[in-house]
Image 1 (cartoon, rainbow, N blue to C red):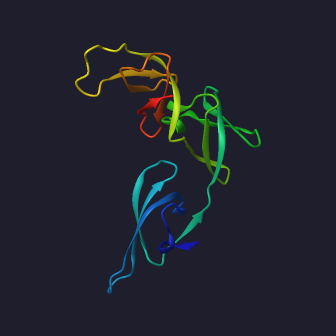
Image 2 (image 1 turned 135 degrees about the vertical axis):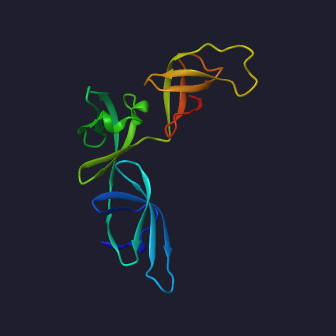
Image 3 (image 1 turned 30 degrees about the vertical axis):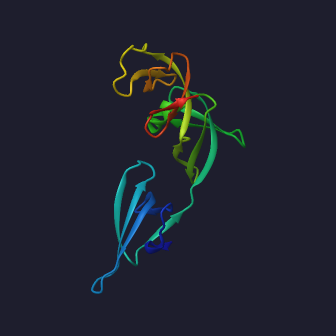
Length: 185
């Protein structure tokens, strides 16, 4: 247990049975009142960001999360199966927990799995991933007033806006935080 005033951005802590990551901390001390501590934090399981309020003497439990590099293998119907690259152990994560991440999961993709006491907290994707276009609209000639873009569907089913020069069957690099086009692979 540590005092909330000792929290720093990046620390993971538990408060009221919920696991949070500290994003920012604001300490406010006036002469007439106890120190007020506002911690901008992210709920590790849901991803929601909120401000938690504490008083200077409050304590929280500092946690250590384990991170492992794992390789995505396949979709087993109810979940996604990953393999530990060191021990070759396999785990399955429910599809409901990886709605956004499933847009970037292709066989043999390496991701980081975050765990706390053998409970899977989340999956961290690399910042960019290379995916193949399976279907895209033909380029419309003369449509170049603004930054000309067209729709393309990737091998995972994700719909992305790409420049007109990108063709069907090409591989492109996509940002995993918002699913936007970066470059050709």
